[in-house]
Length: 214
Image (cartoon, helix red, strand yellow):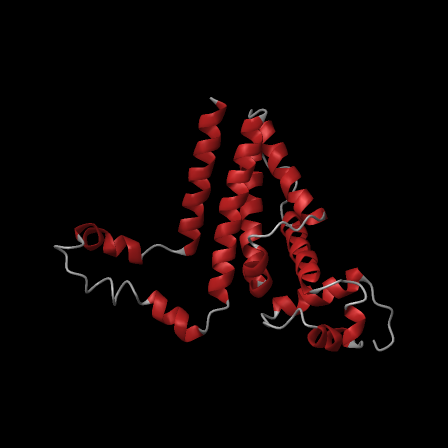
């Protein structure tokens, strides 16, 4: 690939491939140059700095997420599918996902996500300011959860193992007279999986939407 003419699209494609390998330095000129078979300096002829490249890659992840939402779904199912897709894509590209979850990418991927959400909320009967407010609520909650899951994915295995064992360790040894609520609910706290938590979050968000329609 040496000598191949680079473009922003080719560079973002390469960055996404590196991000899928969970490599922490995937957005460096060195890593991208090696992936593309090009001089590292060539990357920065197309992006002014690393942040601009990060936002472009993050926007591509949102495009990937929207592409996974199959056509023909009803508004609720569409929003749920989009939310799960965003979480899955961010976790599959964890360093980028964790870094862009709180950002505004200002690209076609983000525009497609916002358009899909606004259209679905309008379709169920929300109007005016209520549409915008619920779109922000949904987006912020989903991106926060996706970013947290992505951040978890890049933790060292020993750190994750230690956190996972906290319910059976630090929490299990708490005195019940001082922390009675924790003692009562500890078995259920330890049994909550990621999919259950995301499902409950999406259900709670939808209840807010449904209540606003009435």
